[in-house]
Structure formats: structure tokens, C-alpha cells
Amino acid sequence: MAGHGVPVSLFKPEAPGAAAVVRAATSADASRLAALSAELGYAVPAGDLAARLADLLARDGEIVLVAERPPGRVVGWVHGSEQRLLESPRRCELLGLVVEAPERGRGVGRRLVLAVEEWARARGLEQMAVRSNVTRAESHPFYERLGYARVKTQHAYRTRLERSS
Image 1 (cartoon, rainbow, N blue to C red):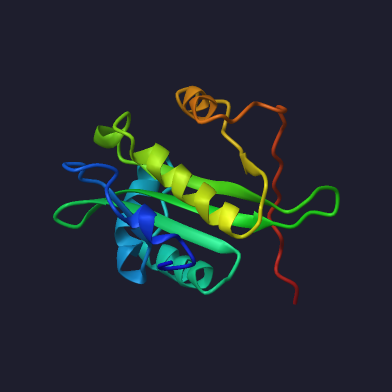
Image 2: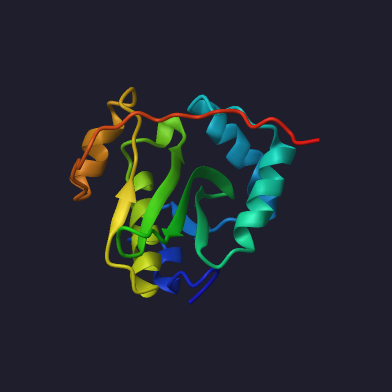
């Protein structure tokens, strides 16, 4: 096992000549992860992302992986989290997946998802979950090809919390 309990097999290219390697994210990846997040419309300052990444990397039930092409260019990232819910057994949820535009359709996203699935399996989890915005229609067939089935459509609500005095 290497970084965060991810089996070493996932850190090697799938076949000779395959260039993308999946590895555990490090704090040095923060600015690249921020740039990739912006590609999907989630602009976050690199410093803020670096602090969040450091927090996640320190937690046992979280995994952040990157896909890297030589010579060390990060072309995608995935964040998985073990979820403990009252109403259902533990599961792993994919909380974020980004692959830079020129790399889409080349197996990078698939490798990242499979790596999180293997991490989850090693933790004894039996189910994966992912939420995909209805506006990201191109991602829905991707998840379906990986064996994910749509189980519901929902609305997401948020509110800002005022600081208490």
C-alpha cells in the first residue's frame, strides 16, 4: 500500500506506454488542483485550496488522488470520502472529479474513479455514490459506463450562516 492506503498497483500505468499515473495528492499539488477546479467553474484561491487539502489529507476517511502525466503535469484529481449515515450503511462518495479538457475521453477520469473504488473496497465499503449536476450532461454517460445507476434527482439548498457575536 502507498499513500492513504491506496494499493500500490494503482500508482503504475495500466500498460506499457500508458503515461497517466495515479498517485496520492500532496500539498505541492494545491495550485494545480485550484486551476483544474476553475475549469469546471469552481474558482478557489490556491491558498484556500491548499488549506482545505491539508485538512483532508490528515483525515483517515478522505482520499484525494491526482492523475499525472510526464514530466509531472497533474491533469486530473478526485476526492473520495467515507460517509457514515444514520439511514444506510457506510459508503464512499465521490465528492469531486476534474480532468482537464484535453485529457477527457482518454481514460484519466476512469482511472481516478477506479482508484477510489479500490480504496473504498480496501476499507470494507460495499457501495459507491456520486452526485452529478444536471447541467453536466456529459458526465452522466461517463458514470453510467462505469456501472453507476441514477437513483434519484434532487434539489440542493444552501444558506449562509451569520457569524455569532
